[in-house]
Image (cartoon, rainbow, N blue to C red; front, side, top):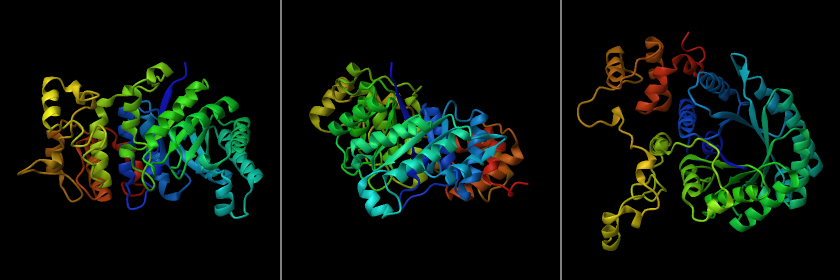
Length: 413
């Protein structure tokens, strides 16, 4: 039976958002949390960019060491063979990325107003086919091809584009609602039609310019299921992303867990989702990105389970199910980080010494694999993030210092 999978793009679409940013260590933590949450795949970034190379190597080493559980790591490249060739050269211990998404614009609007005569439809197909073949020849296990501005691309060319990519070895086609103008009924119809025509999954990539990113993602997935194909849904933690954001990871998971009527469509999640990490991930991301969560953020906002008005309070006191769709306890504990303690507290960080380092690590029950290396990494990671390190960050440093050292080539020799 076809299943639903989550391919999170926080480390690509999320971090490239204007007026925001995340350190390479922060991006590493996103992969850590996605692994704990049980998502299928993380689009970890741009492996062809020089400043991403040490980070990509560190992620490959951490994945090999089991730090991310069963999370698959994928790289985003333009649909250009040269990008893929550069990406394929990035390796750690002989291991490179096994999964890619390759992107190129497909709409007549972007052909006219973005490419401006440089590429036409035939050239777009040729570029994509060459990029897919390059990725497969380099050993990629799966390749998704991205139809940027797919929602403004006609059915005929979308089908032609996807079939050519499939023949070249692609495994999925990503339908990008790049400007966020699609609507649920239209998305579902288009996904069902395209997935049936090409015989492979159509991946959702929905922006939130109309506030419909989650609804469109759910509808697109249902279209895949109707066509007998697996559904792959792009998400970002806390719904961050270009302009008004992308489909929120937690909201989309909860929609498939608790949305009324979805069970009749056989909407079964195929990933080992563990929502007990949901609060820690969301609140860590808010802290790391410097973006406060709205009070009404789904599942994790301060008011997500708060009641005040008389009728609601009375009903919730009698049985929270009267006014709550799901149990808050399923979302796990709130963070209780060492650095946030009130009153007298000794921290460890960029300018700290061994005494403070040992005090914090002992207090958290962390026995570093390599104490001297972990100590230096605490200093470097704190310098890179510019904020106190969280308990989960310290645990990752203590458990995997040798792999994390790849983030800082030449600084720990």
